[in-house]
Length: 430
Image (cartoon, rainbow, N blue to C red; front, side, top):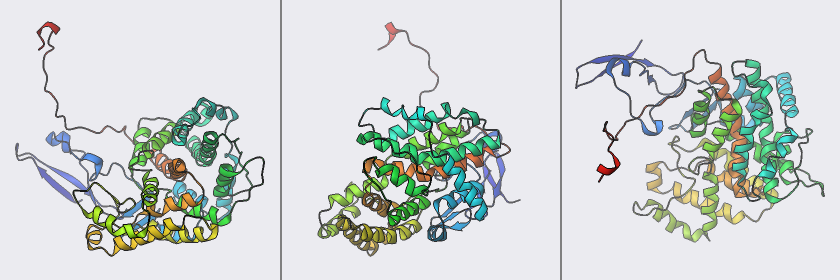
């Protein structure tokens, strides 16, 4: 067993901490004895140097630009797999054979409907409510309708809840959109695949026939695969922390949705579109590059750089090709956006400053353009992200629940407030 010795210079006391080796990536130091032996805690704002859990689901090598789902490279899954197959992989740990995949797909299809009583929730929201607000509330309320499988200590209950969440999120999300634009709900059509079904629920109306464009469905499916999981990000960590208290799975996923809603997390692709639309022509790009490099200028190029990836985001390479294919197929009027995006990418990648800082385009740089081309409004971008990420959240929740021992999350703090002081009577206060 490898150890690391920590010595407190103020007391001279030392403790040997176990150094644990990962199957991939950096080793970690088990600091469990740090407080009991030395009376010390660690201070790590944002948990940038802290492994809060042990997991076998997703691995990221930021320096190499590598993303693996259960050991499989994202490039291979994106090129050969379906979202349902990836969901099975994340949930159960292995790629399914044909019979397993068919059975899993049938189960998901059986759960796409939501209890009719839930549809009446929507009328309680203001007509212009943000779809993420509706999504967060409705998902949290699912436990009041599906309380037949809420025993988190029962493996079968956990599995049923996982299936329900993966299946029902597209329906709930599409209904959220329909409500905000005043159109009737379109119920699931179980003859369609997962992504085609969602597009139909989003854009079909009872008055007209609607046929899903297969290129559009594949573009959405690709985005869903790329966003299915991303290790211990803010929303996944939120789901795990909520789960540690023993909360029901619907409440935990609702907490994850709330965390994803933050502009620093799930709203990045929306910010990219806003930035690109503010650029009138490619001639403005050199000036913007100059501004982005100016430390005294608060301007930022959205969609460049990533907290984890210090190389090119592997997902961005995959989604870029699909972006061009989709725009050519749909013949949309957003080609200027693509031209500006490509010129901006080219200008940044050849600039020494961006090379030195390793500010490469990330997945949000192109995903916003794809969603816009599909006709999805900006306020639904993070909702789509939520649908895709649900299987990742559920997989982490399931993994945590299957551990022999898991403790409630209880981070410590570095207290910098007043020390103990006595109450002062009102008439003696200054």
